[in-house]
Length: 367
Image (cartoon, rainbow, N blue to C red; front, side, top):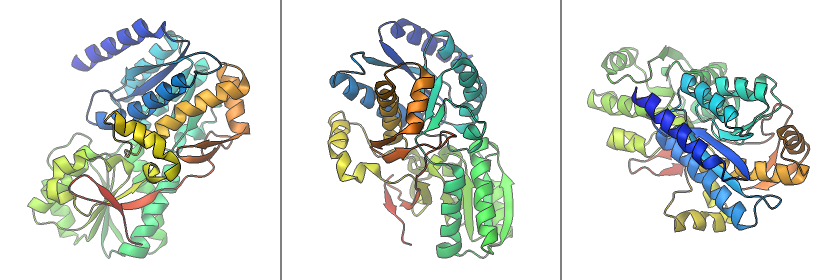
């Protein structure tokens, strides 16, 4: 009941503000729920882009307006949000965030002629459907999984590896990709097992990991569960190193796991905030006391920028015209040069292996 009430409030806010905008961009993602921190990253990046584009005169003389829609990273709520966005007459979406929410929402947008650019969803199946109006500003699990797998095989070289996932589209998908890569390299995966998102007690799983003499664990999923798994592992005397994807790269994992998060391996997008060409943008974030280093901040900023550039370049607000323009051109953006293939995926994107620290910071891992 609470979640439904929050959704209704979000929808009401969207309806009340939409009329003020010349060009409305829906920002769809988790305002509430266990991974709302990632939604904050997306909203921070998108809102900054809207602010700076408007300050520079807008898009063909029109102003942009961003409206938040809360899907809580829940597939059913994402469908409700997508239908509301369509009903509100919004033609552009930055989002959704969780792949399991983005997938069903994309079906609605494709049917209704709404352009969606996700700055966070990495599941390949989202763009494999052939929808003309679906784009990303982040790489695929089919890229990220092998990066992690090769690092594990070449640098970690475990003897008895376990792969755990949260049974969701994103988590299980990337875990499967890692398994395929390490198996090809001859790494012994002694355990491939799913937990349920929202689980709190991992003592039985930890006992199994200890019984199998596991010396390295890869986890596919998000930070709330991994944070608890890390903390409980250390408390129960299981000291093997862990690794996870960008879905665990959140300072809150350190709040949950404490010192147990020290040394966690994480694959993340490059540190775009350290690129000298983004210095002015980084200062703009810092002036507002916002953190530009979250993995989805710069991709979300870029998503809005691409929508604006597409409208300008196509000299049209029709999403089909904008999509055609985006696929036919290249763009210099905060995440680097952007070029799209026919599926709406980036032609070039890299993931980097980092060491996570207990204070919530990261440093590039030794190769």
